[in-house]
Length: 252
Length: 320
Image (cartoon, rainbow over all chains, first blue to last red; front, side):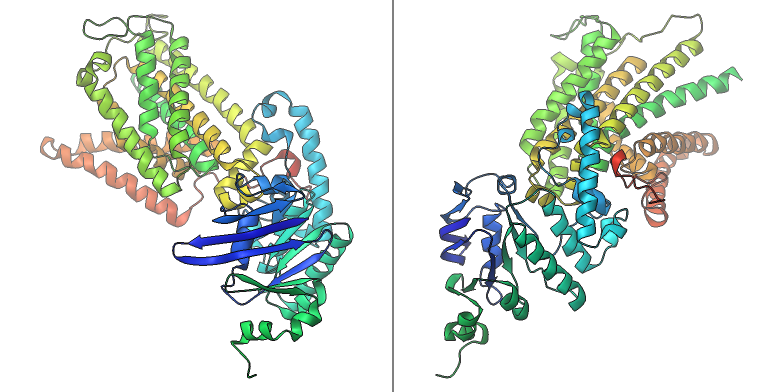
């Protein structure tokens, strides 16, 4: 589904991501773990088109993504959420979702003048779709509230809802579990599993190891900008290189 | 009585110029978050364009004497300001907002200096004079003529208001609002942020240009003195006081702040002895600053708060 080859990124003299190659299989929930500064989020940012790689290539569903404008990945069905959620605070929860889908008639300036009937009809459809997703995420009771009034965990759900509106093929989740109470976390895991069963591929950055080990298969491990290993939960747990990366070395 | 009424009409005509400019700025700053500090520049482009299209021939300019009807002048003012914004926006709108502010400020100052020095086009500091005032001489009294001009202004504001409401409360406007809230997030949701910023910038500036056209027609004389940066500052205060993000607020802010500005000017002129008039004029600026601070402290959303729900279809039925 997603394939990156020899991806690298320099920030000045610092090589944040160093010749990383991996593939994410279709309909998997792939985990991406590694200590802070391993280059996970930088990799995400390049895949999502937020900044260009220094070198290397990114392919999504057979199509090359690197070198395209920042909105291109989204339009081909590859969407992301942020480590720190970025809701549109002064807009309602409902409209945070409604603004997301691509190719809305009413987004074209002239259509707001000459095709108002069709725009209205599409708006009603988007509203119903948004409310369905909000119900699925247990946020429907907050639909009319300003997004800024929600809690941190609810913001994460809101972001997930926003990307779901576009009917994505693959979702990049940056730390869905960070700073979330256990009840809400369980809810998020449940939603991810349900969405995966519907055919959506996930690539997840996460520090909560229980969550990663239970949810993700396979798991990619990064450290110091390099891909350390790839495997299932057991092989990652038992690999001495992983322990070393996280704990700074173990006695031989 | 007629004195007071004609003063009121005169006051409202000027207030309507400010309100209309506020509407243009609301599209840019209030709705899209574009920190355009070059309002005076687009106002100037509109004023000069309309003046040259409708004005008489002068001995010392290379362009003029077209004597076209006012409506053509105003349309030209809109188009010229819009095209200028399209060009300026194309080179500046990739900048972050603080840089955009510095750049647009510089551009507005350059436009003003061009008007001051490009004498064969603008007559420099001497200004363009004897511009025809539409509807003058329709009746016997200047009062009725002015009242008719005010009616024209009101109609123009009403049209612009309805048009802006339609644009802003559509999915198109919703993208603008999302860019204001977080342009990175909007881009990751596949929106062409630059394209939308350019559209909002152009439309807002065209409205400012239209106002410049109306202004030059009414006053009949323009010179670079009319387009100093203080104008931009006034319009921002008006929009913030009225309610940034709300079109009605933009209109109300123009009238209220212009009322305080011109009212305090009259009072100061009447009360202070001649020797202190200059200092008195500075008090007005202090007063405006004070008002801005009070509004930001006690009513940061302005007199009329922006509507949270953008699209009509997204209004939730409370009974549900």
